[in-house]
Image (cartoon, rainbow, N blue to C red):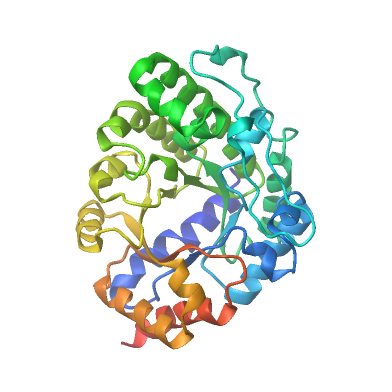
Length: 353
């Protein structure tokens, strides 16, 4: 990673978090905007996800509209590595705003298959990886000195689910653990290559692995299969010069707090349905950043005044912790800007409270 990129990461993320405790800066505002990027430029998720120029245009429009403290390059963030490996993604034409996805019939491997036969995908040529890399290059060039730009990459378990399907993978953890370890190893290698391509154009990375939440996977199974591959990934990206590696696992994660801290990720996610006091105490004890989400359905359907009050309450409950990040669950396509800006305003106003 270039010296310019190292400087950007250190300047725009870490000190911003450290200085909050002295009231010197509002809590960072990190809305989870993926398919909603298309709304800013009147494009569908399927259209914007297949064009580097459109994706960059959507990300930059998001920045102009909301001025968030971080931008994420990605629309259907769990599909790209699997698509590059050979899975077929279903797209939608015309005005259909459905999110592209991999149908169960389009998984490419079965339990017991020889993992060594899976293709090694080049992120500069395979599937839509080049779309995201080109968008990242344009966004970094345009605003990379002003805002933290991260390229979306899958976590290893979520990629494995895309390759084989959730139920077969869960069964394999019981019936053929060696197969699961081999599949996760393949996933880690593919994710490393994709992440490195983002880094090479000046972006950082953000890991998404919500298929590994406690809603779907017992915490002891995470320890047995996923913890070491995730540690390896995070260690690798830090070795590439990424100062702050976020890990996003939505859903019920409170039972997994200690394990997620052990991954080495710099900032973690407390989703809107999780136990904030436990997350707060655990992350504060380890001096880690933690993003607390507001329910995105509430954001879409409520009023700016009500949203502002909830955001202010969340900020008060952060106790001015230096690592607190104001976040949202995934914002639905078509959410009004004023609803999101109410959260940002609460962050700004908190400095004077």
